[in-house]
Image (tube, one colour):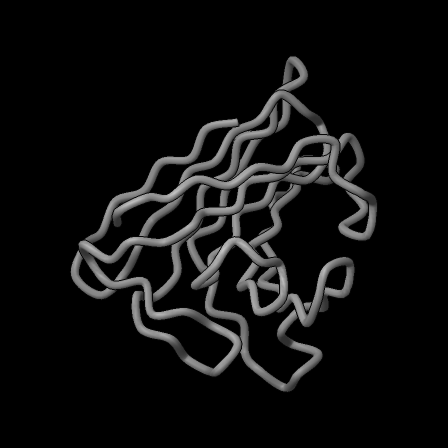
Length: 136
């Protein structure tokens, strides 16, 4: 799985790609714990790309932030799924819009969670999950 990003003004643009035709996800948290993670899960279904923001209350318990009454911040969503590879692009604001978001400021360091599944169902378990520290 690969993740790329660039910051322009008040927006961070992401590209993520994995060898799967299921969902692909990245997450941000102050620690490597799943509890409290701001999770961005994407998929391509019938040619339509979707990226949904989730909040992870604890390991195995994550819900779209819209279920907390929070408006989604993802925009400029596009993606493809072909030859066993899912590719997604999207953007989010740098500033946190709620307590379920993270302040992703330039030059800040974050443990970045990366995961993907063989299935498009966001509740389906990941086949790969790892984390590493990045600097935005």
